[in-house]
Length: 279
Image (spheres, rainbow, N blue to C red):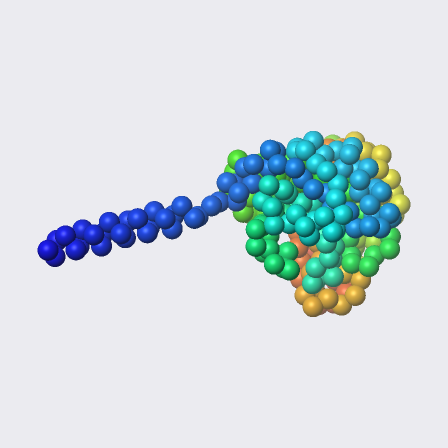
């Protein structure tokens, strides 16, 4: 009798274990259907944002079928796992993110409960400049590359876009343009300036950096720093290096800061970058 009871316990245990295992899904499995589903591109209702956003999506999005929708339609459809959604959304760190999420049957009012496929800050919340538009096409391109990789590789899906970023292209054939507005308020030593010249790392005006991105300047990596305009609850900023010609993300770092003057490419970061190029 004891053997029978023990056997039943073991059998029930195995069934429960198998049932629990069946509920464990990797991100790869969750996004494996991405190309088969429709991506709903959520528009904000502001022409200043929506017009260029729509134009870039129409020009560049090839990975999956897509349709544009309103915020009202998004709220009606967000519980449907047959859709993915892409939108610009502000978060607690006072940064606006370009993000792709998957419909969730029980999202509630909190978007963070939806599966985030890929997300990256693209501008400061409240920033009235349009500089981010020069990088929007590149974001769409490396989002597609990331999602395609995440569909077949769990490590990519769980490690995130910043870890997928390539190392800065270590070749003498590349120019590195650091916009002056992306630099921290720190003095660069003469020694570092000399090494920057050797590595073809130049500090340029914001206009020159934007033109390089818009023109798709060959063999050129362009800086982009996204930092809050106001004092956020959590003080983080991001530094990026984006290929102007190939729209690849070569460098992506999140930084915590306490002093506003330190938010940007620091002398230490530039020194490390230069060291990778001329080592």
